[in-house]
Length: 222
Ligand code: SAH
Image: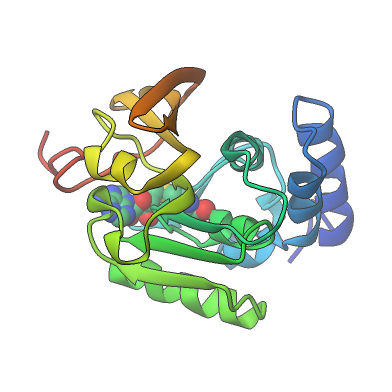
């Protein structure tokens, strides 16, 4: 099973040291979460030996689990309050891995997936790991989830052609929305911080995410 990475614990420790701490991941909460959550449980059996490699991996339905560094980078960029009372929204559950990382820094994570089979797979993995503060919802995440808003942070893990307006409305004051915005295949990671009635926008890094679909995303045939 683990031909190339015989020990997942060791592989995970190496990942944290060589892919995260050696780059610009400095938030101890993020480093601890990345060291604690077993990424290999979120990938399929045929990719087990690649689970801790420095790259995204296929999870079915044409979707991917993001590169570990990008998961850590986006989590750090949210700059969640340190009181662990945060309520966070993620758009694009995929495997559930990013939601699992967020669950270690927040009181509650809502995560929205449009593919019901992926949502169900993520639910099962999260429960098997006894992570009970993540709720997986099936809908078009471009609308966010007004019912549980406002949020202390919103992460979008699929690429949008523009910042979905409903999401900025659902931010608490001073909270951040992190979203890849740009063309298909190449985007800028954008950070929007609500400051009262104003939104402060900054560009963080070039990234490449699978497309966000639906109302505020890309249409299937474009
Ligand atoms: N965060 C994931 C990886 C995201 S891949 C992880 O940790 O594994 C992007 C995901 O966004 C895919 O699963 C895709 O189905 C989903 N997605 C795309 N458009 C969406 C939309 N409008 N609403 C909700 N989910 C969407």
